[in-house]
Image (cartoon, rainbow, N blue to C red):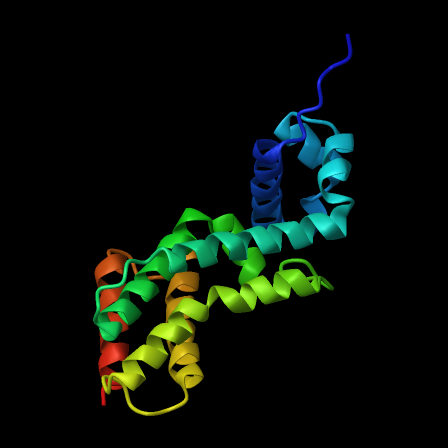
Length: 196
């Protein structure tokens, strides 16, 4: 009796997570389809069946990172106060990065030289920040934030959270630094700076 094919969603996610771990920890040279298949307890045929080849696999890792990230930002419960929601989105950014640090480095660095995401992946990446831009726009409309282009506030917030999270993930923060409290304080100070 032939072995049943189990190229399902669970295997796909397992392969994406493992590929992200290999790329973020050991670099692009460590990612071979044979090694990935062995680590995941499957065959290279399964990897090819699910992704095609290595470029498609890297694109899928990138895409999965932004899908998870976007889902976490969209899942932030709205409070009715757009400034508080702005801070909560910043907290969700950190939560997402800490939940999937192996994907975070693929999403926001050139972890694989020469990699250019496919159009769909690029669109998902852009769309993942829509909750932040929409929240900033709501804060401006409500008169809570200064009347500037929403993208200016959103990108500046992104820069702050990305910088702090990157320092945290790289282990570059001072010893005994209260990361969570300092991170939230920085978000609140940033929000206060944009108050109308």
